[in-house]
Amino acid sequence: MKNADTHTLIRQDAVIDNHWQVLKKFTDARIGLGRAGPSQTTKDLLAFQLAHACAQDAVNTPVNWVDVETCIEDLCLPSLHLHSQAIDRPCYLQRPDWGRRLDEDSRTRLTAWHAEQAKAADFCIVIADGLSATGIETQAPSMLRQLIGDAQQAGFSSPFVCLVDQGRVAIGDEIAEVLNADLLVVMIGERPGLSSPNSLGIYFSYQAKVGFTDAKRNCLSNIRPQGLSFSDASQRLIWLMTEAKQKKISGVMLKDESQRNAAIQTNTPANLLTKD
Image (tube, rainbow, N blue to C red; front, side, top):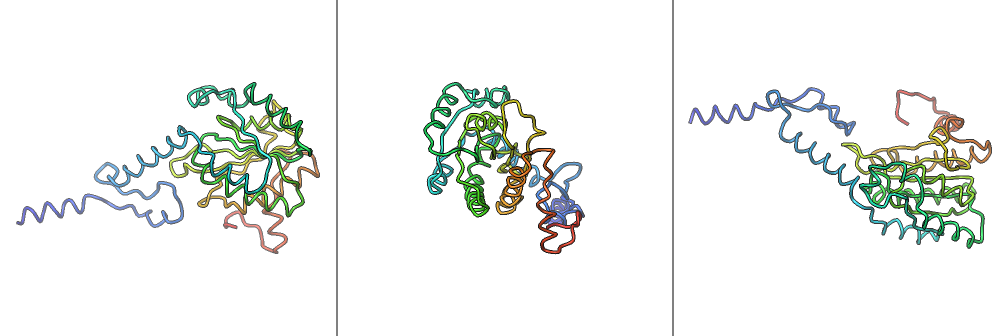
């Protein structure tokens, strides 16, 4: 019995906690991990393997567009489904350049579709699968609803919406050029991290054309309930759209000062060390 009790005691004391564990409630980052001897605990190792599997699934699983398409229909927005030059997922991952351009059929259909529309496309939204199908499926519908409501209140007309399979950020440049749209918003599934496989990113450009560099784009990242909220992302994007329309610039020339302006309006002192 004594040997059994000693064995149980040793097993219970094998896991040594980390003093930083108390900070884990403030972040999804892997901090404050305990150890069992020189190794990770089984619990932490299994959690890491699960997170890695979720990230791989986010990259490799095709997007289910049903919820996004339903949202577009509910909002009564004109839309078109397109495809990049990357014919499948392996091709998309191995040839990023093909994910930045429309295939010939999609460009032809987009040109014809634009000619059929009865209004000018000064505002265009492109939703591309990117590197996270999960990010599109879980975040894009809510983000789209929030943005359309805020955009209408701000005086922007209803946008054209294009869904793109196997698309990267720059594919929006070609779409905006064909549609002759001044304002381009690209919603895309972000590269998954081990704590965020379902993030949505937004890239904004003014008068986008094929060949634009990232210096011409403004980026809003980590849009999800655990990151940048839909409301905050929408308000920041509306601010960028409004400023771009007035100043006719975007990217590095247009610094996002939406939070600073909000602090001034509410008499709240700006502090980089505090969370808004």
